[in-house]
Image (cartoon, rainbow, N blue to C red):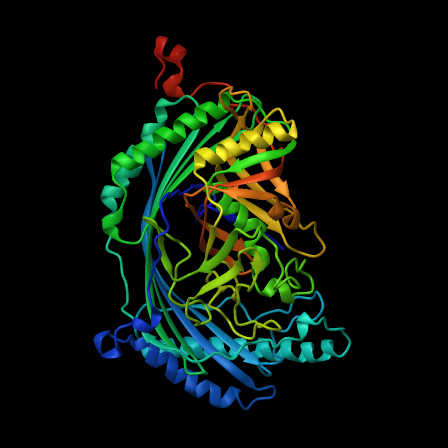
Length: 585
């Protein structure tokens, strides 16, 4: 499996978010919700429950029986405004509902989801759209049809699994139950909605992208504003009934340039917020744009870095993605169970895998880190389990995994990390991965330690990884257990006091077990990377946070480069020859 984290919702507008400050943990207690009487219960729940009661009576008596059934309807409202190079690209608003039906045949111990060998079992499809009208008869009809479809698929899959198990050898990990038994939850929270006037944002994206046109280095610029309000409604045959909503806003800034040798150069920045009142003001946006422009202009003129191995300092943003890729994906529970996975940490619970001064948690109840909203926050996961704080590593020792409702031996229950994009099947995924350290120094002292390491190792320079786009990792057993992190801004740091030198074309590479042991100290200021992580269950919003880290050894390679040269002509606004000859600009 190749998984990746990126800081974008779409391929055109990729950006980065940064927040610095002291950790401030705040959360929403799912059990502290107002009683049903204080919140309006959606009529969707009654329609879903009525159809569920009817279906489980019949399908629970089929051969094979449906032992679990669950219905989820997601009501999504989305606003999108995008501009490029001073003009409006698009402006739209839409609302839709999506139904997902889960039918499991067999039993909690062995059901149609069981993976036999390395063969992926088919599922019944991604779900179906349903009307946005609260018409119970129409909603129930859509559920009826999708339930029949999903039962038939589960029935066929279970028959194949029963046959396959008789001729396949099971690993110890594969002998764990297929589905966990969880206590039912009833939570009726308020529904959410957004009311966005797109006109001001249309003016803003024009102005924000027009500001980049003064730079000769900027070939293209895109700014995108998105607002999302999602309301989830879940019912299950176990007795769970959930109604909850979440709002997210994002402003993405993206610019692109080219080096003389054809290498593509990108700069990104994100603003994320959850309350309309917290939208960034123009001053903050233009300040971010000024930094992006200056760094892009510097990268265009910067020399290429050669492959090397040596000491490096990663700022908190870079360190956060480093931990997401190197550790976080390998701590997802389903990877310990799947025989086709590398299972890096499957047998290492209770063992030291990180330096003793590091602790790693995944806390999806956290709404903020400092002043920064965290994208990995939610109230309930996509299997109806409440969000939880999970200590994965305690002072270097592996303690737990991020768990969905797919149990492991020794970990029989979910801890609220079953996640998916609409239309995919939930698996265990990261949420808010937070790195804490008991060996902190100031960032200035961390830099001094970097220079000491450079001198001790006799290296001509070390690296300062200051900004990052994202990364990806391979976790499958048939592939190298390697990771790759994609820096944007990298400096050479010299031990003789010369000024730092900006370089380009750097990718961080390595293998996890070796890389994690090379960390020697951390800074004292946590920083946040908000992004979207793609894996088996689609793209999900996540956050990763870490202080800066100093590593005694980091390998970097040359970045893949385009062979396309920069445009032959300058941009019209910068073509002075055209101006002199009366050309139209």
